[in-house]
Image (cartoon, rainbow, N blue to C red):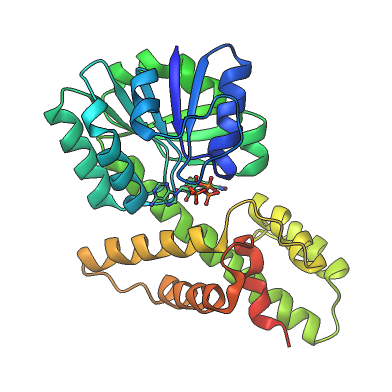
Length: 276
Ligand SMILES: NC(=O)c1ccc[n+]([C@@H]2O[C@H](COP(=O)([O-])OP(=O)(O)OC[C@H]3O[C@@H](n4cnc5c(N)ncnc54)[C@H](OP(=O)(O)O)[C@@H]3O)[C@@H](O)[C@H]2O)c1
């Protein structure tokens, strides 16, 4: 298929590579131009080059702006697959605008990070028409190991935001626990295996604790992107009149650390709140 990728950040760049390797004709666009043979400078030109338009953009604002810049090039022959984690309002807005233009819209965020994207092993959450999903399954399978249909458009967005709340809160809890252990003379070498064998251990704990202990904050998923997802979670909670003190506190801590210049580090830099 002809596929255009919008957004060549950590994930989009790796998915574009895998789709090209699988034999698809790939065109890419990034707001800040990238030195790639398949890149075009104009978003509308990227839209004209392909029927399948896949977004791996930062947030709702990025998706709305990109959608407006490609709108003049859109026809009913296009399908838009949004993989970005965005707010629910923007998901609904994109779906409505696509419907007006006779375009299929797939609400298709993912879990999995830099390594999973490199290996073509993301897990896609899917909201929308499953007949359309089946049509594009072969494309989605190039970049993923699993596709989970969750319901209507918007449901995948909500699940993605809710599960990121769990990840952010978990890393905040891991940070607090390892800081307490260290302050009382228990080294990370002792603490980490104890967590691994505990019911509270998890793939996320196994991934993040060793790098946090060694001060390696190489970015797999940025603190700024986790911060914005916590804002989406708080918006969903407010809309439902729910109090969510845990994610409120973690969100505020992430905002504080971003303001201190840590925004582009991995979100496990939450542990740096305990730096002396
Ligand atoms: N990394 C992960 O582990 C992970 C996991 C699950 C979900 N996600 C989600 O997947 C999406 C992409 O993640 P990522 O890690 O690849 O993000 P990233 O590295 O921060 O890349 C963000 C991309 O969005 C573009 N962008 C930002 N603002 C824009 C705007 N106003 N208009 C047009 N483009 C804009 C950036 O372009 P510039 O280069 O010009 O800034 C860049 O291409 C995000 O929604 C993220 O939350 C990521």
